[in-house]
Length: 351
Image (cartoon, rainbow, N blue to C red; front, side, top):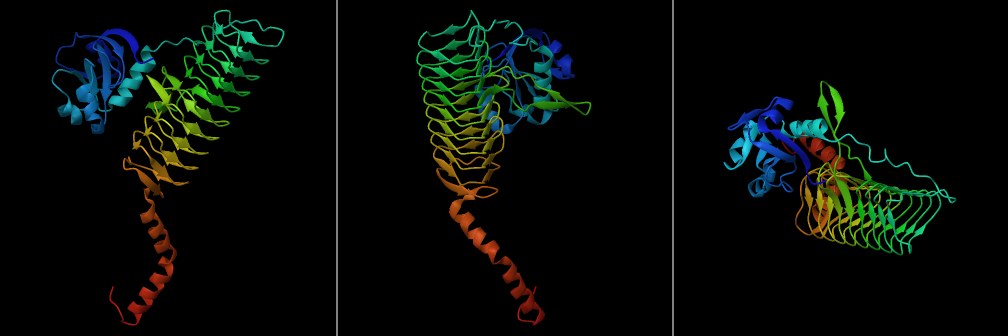
């Protein structure tokens, strides 16, 4: 879901989180969306100056913005002012999102092999469906695809042609799997993201209304989890190869042909460029970009965007040659300090 349909005035929306409408209060809003995906009539939020380019190109009719960033907003966009725009937007989604459980109406009788396949599902006769598989209403499975035992394919999910879905995988509602995709055992596609806001000192869950899109020829390793987006899609592009035990958070985008090695974690709304390589146990914070062709050594941590193609290492990440020199320097630091203190004691150098 790229947008959450609603039908409220700006003032009715502002009243939900005690925001202040600037200008006309009776403008009607038809949907909630992100700056990037918004259509005319939608409300989005603007909370970081780094997204100024998206703000100026957005089709949103209104945004929630803090007082300190309001000067960046074009005059054509109506505004609701609130100290924490992200918190306000999440409160709106929680209040206005549908509460239906997509599995609630999946009363499907199992066949003699223990398979529960909805009569409203579109499963190719040329697909192989093993025992104890669940396929929800309106889901699709393409020709030549093998679905292993104990796999769950949620309502409205789609699996393309010639895929191999190993035992124990879960493909959540509305998620889309392309052609020639391999999911190793235990992969979860479309779990809720780790999204909460605080209200009265309590962590309140944010509904995740988006999905995951996995393009053609992707392989995903065992027990990797890819979270669905809050709105829009978490996107894994063509030819990406992901190792075991990787965590990819909501609204992340992984570019064509990227390699993600085991135990790597990528936080929400970050982007990994085409043919980038993230070594084992790399950590990527949220809302940053790893550029095309960037290669991160194992155990590195990215705290800000790196665009320039090349090799990087360290915590925080730096060009690998700089990191190697720093490691050598640290190795001899204790001995150097001892020599310096000895020289100071004997008057051979000053402090």
